[in-house]
Length: 267
Length: 267
Image (spheres, rainbow over the protein chains, first blue to last red):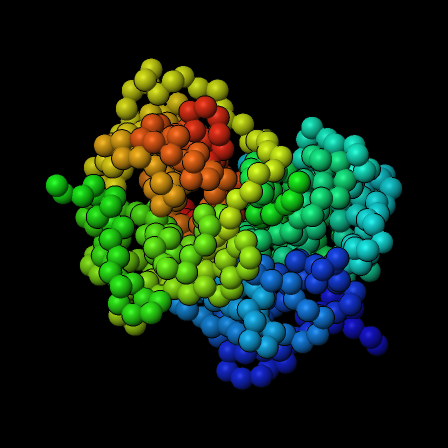
C-alpha cells in the first residue's frame, strides 16, 4: 500500500549522530518550495523520532531562512538541554552547505493541573453544513486538506476586506488521524492575512512561525481524522512585515494550538 | 557617571569570533535568576552589536532552558543565513558547559508599504491619572519600571479572577529612552497570567518567549522615555502549561510589539 502523502513527507533516514535526511514531497508543494507547515511538521518529527526525546511537543519555532529546493535535505538536531520534565532542542535544515531553516523546540511531560480555555472557539455552522472551499490551482498542498470557510475565504482580486480574520474547518482530505506533526502543519494553513486586507494576491512569505501545543496525545487521539476549527487574524502591518495569530480547536472546543507568525510582504 | 542599570546589563565583551561575554546585573534579579526580559534584551543586543548584522530586529525567540546563575555568561552567536533584506541568527547562552538559554532572531530592513493596526490599544486613563503600582519586594527587577495598572494588577492572595487580562502603562523608572533591547525587556513585563486566574502566587516560569517587533528605529525614538501601554492575556491553561499573548503600544497608538510566551505552572 502506498503511504499517505503526509507520511511520505515525514520519512527520515538516519545519516549520522544528530543528522537525519528527508526529501520534499511533491504533494506538499507551495508556489516556491514546500508548504511551510510541512517543513514545521518534518522538523518536529525529527525530534519526535530521536531516541533521546522525552515528553510531548510544547513549543516549536521555525525561521524560514531560504526556500527549500525540490529534493533531499538534511536536518541536524541536538538536545541543548534535558531537564527532569522538559527538553530543549536546536535544529537546522540544510541543503548542501546552505541553511534553509533554523528551528528550536521544547518538549515536556504533562501533568494534571487546573485547566481552562480563554481563547474560545468562534460560533460557526457545523462543517457538514458548509461547502468545501478551494484554493488557486498553483497551491498544490491545499489539495491535501478539506477546508470549509465560515469567514474570510481567499478574496476575489480587487476586493479588500476591513477584517483580516479567517475562520475555517479543516481536516486531512483522506481523514488521516491527527498527530503532533500533522497538527504542526495545520497550524500554518492560514494564507497570508494581507491577501484579505488588500484584496487578492500580494507577494508575501512567512519568516518566523511559533506554535504552542496545548493538546496532549490523548486529546489528539480523540480528534482522529475529524475536522478542527481554526481562526486567524493579523495584529499589525508595518513597513514590509506583519504578524498573524491563530488558534485551532477540536470540534468539542478543546484548544489544540496557539500559533503566531511574522510575514514579509511587498505592497 | 555610573551607567544606567539597563546599560550595565547590556555590557558585552568580545571573547572570540562569535562569542561575547556578559554578566548578570543585580538590579535585574528575579526570584530565581535574572528577569527573563533582561535575558531577551542582552541576546538581542549581542546580535545588534555584531559587525555583520543588517537591519532592525523583526523576530526574537528565547527558550529558557535553565536558570542563569549570578555572574558571567557567554553568548555564542552566528548568522546562519544572510539574505538581501534579512538575516537569520542562532544564539546560545552558556555558563561553563551548561546551556542556559537558546535563541533565534531575524533581523531585516524595513521599506515603505501599506500599513494598518488591527490589534488596537484598549481605552484607558492616562498614566498621569493612575497611581504607581507595586510588586512584591522579592521581585527586584520590577523596581526598574514605573508601572501603572489599569486592569489586572498583581492579585491579592486567595482572590481569583475570571479574566487573565492585565493592562498597564510602563516606563523605565529613570525614563531611559526606549531602544530595541529595552523594548524586548518590556515585552516580558507581564507576570504569569495564572497568578491572576488562581488568585495569588503559583510556581510558574516562562519556557519560551517570542517577540515580533513592529516598530522601526524612528518610531522607538519618538517614544523616548515615555510610557508605553501593554496588555496581556492567556489563551489556554492545560496540564502544566499555559500561553499568554501581549501587545505594546506607544501613547499615540503605534503597535510596537506583539509577544507570546509559553509558561509552565504547578497547581
